[in-house]
Length: 233
Image 1 (cartoon, rainbow, N blue to C red):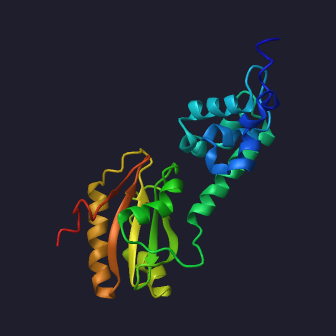
Image 2: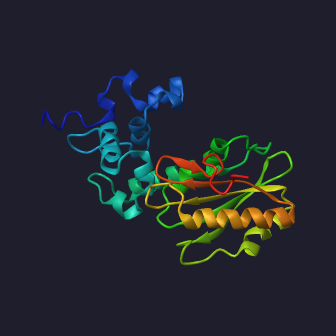
Image 3: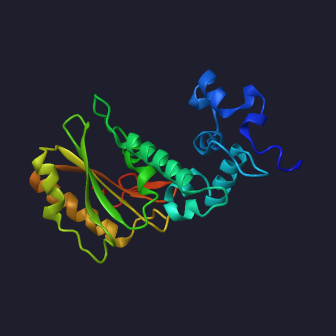
């Protein structure tokens, strides 16, 4: 019985309960396991909701791993039924959408980090290669983020004309290519470099600048412009 006595959040002191602390001090005052505990609501015998949250983070390698895990993988964890798994995946999806939603004043891209921040949270979790283009106006403000290809970029050669269609349609002044490496290693391949060179050349003819090509990996990215790969002139 003593082992099971501590599994309820209500057994914690009032000033230690995640929900009460969130109300008093704001969500930013809670660690990730405590935020998960609010979604889980209750724990299991021997573990309160915070401890269950900590176990999930350990099991999946942090919040990014929980994001990448399928619904079925989350639901299969001890103490996580259908409702809790759905709540967790829904909350993470809301966070993903919020990270991509432009505010009333469109965000400006002033560095590779600015561009990566728009897409890295989601794209680092993708299991296939995705190629996207960030469309920019003359002030480097984001007009749109468009997905162009999904699947192996080696097996499905990118048609340069298709890549520029969204830019021409939105009257974009510049663009940034972004794609992910599901392996987690963002080191650009020879094909990545060749694609970048081809896009730069086509952009010159169309008067649409290719500002950068980002490769997204697990928890990090590579700016091909910073590395001077296909941007050495």
